[in-house]
Image 1 (cartoon, rainbow, N blue to C red):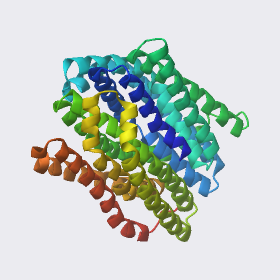
Image 2 (image 1 turned 90 degrees about the horizontal axis):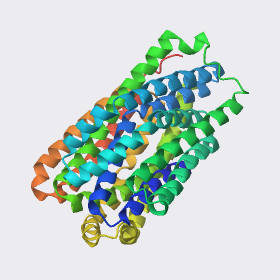
Image 3 (image 1 turned 180 degrees about the vertical axis):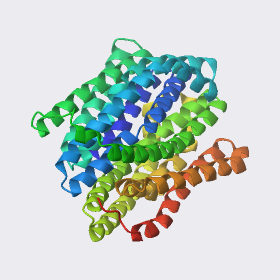
Length: 420
């Protein structure tokens, strides 16, 4: 959880530093590009989630060879995906930002930031693998070290390069690239030490065809599920952009408030992935059910605390993040809805962790698609309300996303678990 909270703090720092420049177009552009970049990376979130699940299951089964094999397969996949993103960054940038529909000034700032930051792709995806592997092995301190290293270096360099050196949005992008490189170096060094100086990348057992195929199927389902989730955030941002630069910037500020709250829950979801994966790998149904109940209870408690905190502290956070009076005014109008997300989203985040840990990824994919359909239908029904309708549809999405998974869970838990 401590590792996860540094991620939204990074977004808060970047938004605050750019916001101090006093230009809503630059703030909106960097916020839009950051969201698009994060959404693209979310598409490859299977590199972390899939690695957690498969590593945790091998950990629960005490299969040390398979633990090494999961790391090798996942790092190979991350390298291919990362360099493919760099190769496609030009057409990808043109397509995405034309689709987003921001003003000329916002789009120009977004394109510039995105093209620079895209060089971080292979390193960022490699860090996804390292985090997933450490979490799967129940090594939270190593995961914490990598994540905090990436985010602290990023935050410090963002302040130095944007405000100190005066590089503006370029400085924020360069800071992200350097931070991801440092994080991957640290992660590999920690893994090298844990494996007694032997990665064994060339072991034929690591590339077993049946296990590779299983990994690809799991990753496919997680990626499609994530694509649906990314569509929600991209649609939200695009509708904000069409409402004007001030609304876009205000929604970007509130999204950072949302991310601060939900990343507490993301930490619990990571715990659910590891605990449920390990107990599933050990074929211990009693421990599995106990883990689900325990984490859901903690999630509800954190959700209530986060909602209250962000509603009370929200005005001060908004004032800190932007100097624009217009952006502050609009953001405060919709603060209550943003503060409710961590509470309403508890079942969604916790059940995501449960489903990933048990590799029930096909069901998770299908239920996410259903929640996306509900979200779009809710927006269509309420779009005449403007930004209010957009936020209400966003909350509706979280209600259905978690609710559908909770309803499906009992039947999945009763099914026979396959032998290893």
